[in-house]
Image (tube, rainbow, N blue to C red):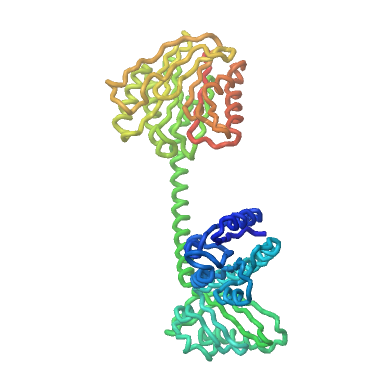
Length: 509
């Protein structure tokens, strides 16, 4: 049985306790009251589904309490069952006149009471179903915006709803008795009249449905787009035709506007794509220079968007020194990519003239400090190698630390990121001189951006320095770069990087 809320009323606490235990054993919620006045008050606040009411009580007896309870019940039926030792016919009549729905004499036969509770529950369930159905119908009726037009089998209008007046401009009284064709332009009216005539002539009484998009005619003569749904209802072997008409003028305006907007967006998209392709070609010409084809250099740049804020560059000076640059601009995408273009141009010009790392760093910083807006900067790792003496210089500012690996893939030296990124402070405040180093045969330098170290797997674990070191360990110099690439791909497992990724591996001869 479904649980119900029961208000039990009795001035005898023992009886009340017995009732409470019995009802709870059946799984119901129980509210207790010890007199009629308290019962009325709790009925109003607790809204029980059923009232078990004693008659003989102080303050207010059960008859008066039942009358007041029934007086407050408006939108739903709440059964009241009297429980009393009074068993004369006049007591029963008085109880029923007071509004009681049933009567049980004391001492209570709990088998009978349980049966009555089941009967009450069935009645309450049917009542709730009826209430729910009524509410659904009312909700639909209250929110119908379409014109609902009912006509006989000849097409003469029998009734219309209020939305018909709003949509067509005709008063209901003006439409009743008229043919529905008056609500359509002449060309559609003729076709509709013929269709209704065919329905009328048909012998079948089966329901038919017809839905179409039409032009409808307002009282003032203007035409507007509408959808029309026609349903045939058969009552007592008589056909009634119900037409549901919806004004779709606003929808048509919206569709037209959407088409115009879509055309504009497509045009804008095509222009943007063309501009981006031009920008890509220009940047490729700037970034992909022949210095990157040096056989001692291996690199990878993976943009988070179409354009990368990470760039790599390499060049050889006239005296044979090898220069390399890894730069990472704030953010990613086109804005970040534009930020690094001055860096690339200056790097290639100054490296061709045998400038020292310190001179290049200061010139890059000055250029960025003057041209970049506040909050924008470029982190770089810049190095120069004298291959004949196996000596080099490296400057790290804002990018992750760089590493020198020996021939067996072990870190032999770490170059920490001790300097600020470029474009933040003036040259006087920048400080930091390049770190000088030397190397053994078959050593390799590895440079990367923070996008590589922060690349995450499905569990949000970052690749990190540990992933880089593990990928390089116990590898030969010839396949070390490929091993690192494979390890990164496996770590991401098809995931998309949230930041640009760049990696450079340089063979130290």
